Length: 67
Image (cartoon, rainbow, N blue to C red; front, side, top):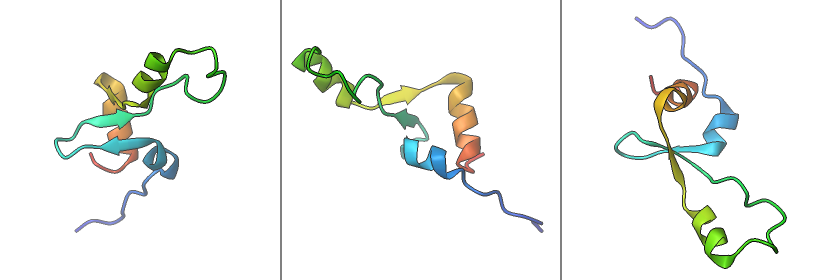
């Protein structure tokens, strides 16, 4: 019998997405401001989510209550 439930960290829940296979995805940096001097190719590349790997992925899953 479980005594308590782990709460989801809402800040992490808003920033990360878990795929069906269990990968952790995050948004790319450099997309917030100063975009006029960035190339169109770079700005398109920033739209694509990036996979988080290693210890960080494990920590993020723990924050989301998936471990």
